Amino acid sequence: MYDLLVLGGGPAGYLAAERAGHAGLSVVLVEKRAIGGVCLNEGCIPSKTLLNSAKIFDYAKHGEKYGVFTEGARIDQKAVVDRKNKVVRNLVAGIKGSLRTCHVTVKDGFGTILGRSGDAFRVQVGEEVLEAARLLVATGSEAVVPPIPGVKEGLAEGYVLTNREILDLLEIPASLVVVGGGVIGLEMASYFNSVGSKVTVVEMLDHIAGPTDLEISALLQKNYERKGVVFRLGAKVTSVSKGAVGFETAGQAETVAADAVLLSIGRRPVSTGFGLESLGVLTERGRIVTDARGRTSVPGVWATGDVNGQWMLAHAAYRESEVAVKDMLGQRDAVRYAAMPSVIYTNPEVGAVGETEETCRAKGLPFRKVVLPMNFSGRYMAENERGDGICKMLFDEAGARVIGCHILGGYASEIVMTAAMMIETEMRVKDIQELVFPHPSVVEVLREAVFQLD
Ligand code: NAI
Image (cartoon, rainbow, N blue to C red; front, side, top):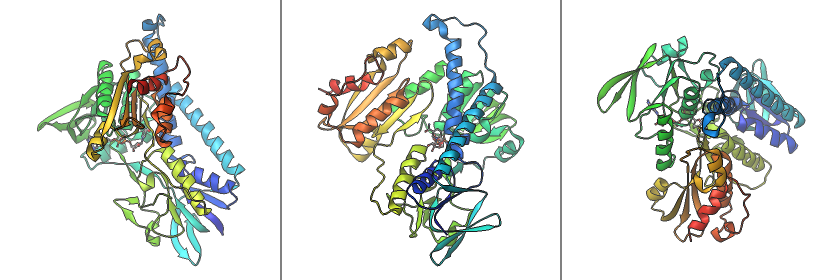
């Protein structure tokens, strides 16, 4: 009997397996598809690899702004996808290596929970029945496929795509309609806009980028409109067919041409279809209910990552899994979500952490704010011709501590961590003012912002 069985080999599962194995537990990890899960194989990493190629291509096409002239720049989609596959292969190999180092047994196959017998949870993988004293459910999430006429047929025929298929497209579609202007939609709109598709984003809400600070989402939209992306907001998709997407906006029916359609209207936890019901674990609208230590309603069963429906981000999954493994080992810890950074890897990037003006108002939380153009940073100005990025910092009413930070601009993905540390450690503004930042750097904009508060 193993000490721990981990169901699912994505960021939540493989990290938990590594930590538990490292701590001396005997661990078996069951994965039905590919170690690394969605993040590594068809999400975070492949999309960032593609987006980097697009960024290089954009520089090549628009180098004249920086005094660099390149002629005949072109994108070779197959070479881009080949490189993406190589990056994924290398990273997956790295994870497999580290699982080996941590003495984790890996079983390839679909795991079905059979139930509990005495002290053991029983899980069937192929012909084999595995037994473990503890169970960690890390089965992740899947793309939501709406019951819109034509979607099912489109998926079968290949002109409707999810995050999985779009990353392997070898031909750049002349026109792409992105259904859902959230994180996946915007990152893929960014890529296909750069490489030459005519991109239309159809979004149900009146703004893009979901819970992002509204000033930043409006600026991001403007950036992409300048690049030629068309946004149809407040629009509900009504039909999909080969060549066209039908939608309704303000009571008007419209259609837009679409050689390919990306479905990016959200993801839902995978909590059914693998026998979880046999344990009586409490779920709520499809997500497994957990506490701050990853414990489910059933003793001996933990759930981390997208399946608990909390933040649906790989870095949230890492932290949740670390805490869950500590809990298994009798060590106290708890996940705090107040300083959870989030990033949209568009160009410019969006980095966000903590409260937004909108959440403060909704909670009745008084705040002070400083908004600075990113051009306060010399490095940003040197590298972004006509860049219109901003950095918005929110402080508590007394101006003593940072409670939120929202950035639009290059390196936002890296800068946001500095702000997250300020929030997580409840650093005092006066202590932040005494920090030395490297000059010239884009992160200096945070230093400027805390001095503007005086
Ligand atoms: P999302 O929740 O970010 O965005 C979905 C969007 O679709 C929303 O704006 C919603 O209003 C819209 N929508 C819903 N139904 C619609 C309809 N019928 N017609 C038009 N619009 C509709 O979901 P997304 O982009 O699919 O991403 C899924 C998950 O993947 C997210 O939870 C995210 O955390 C994760 N992810 C994170 C990334 C990152 O951290 N950079 C990158 C990509 C994905």
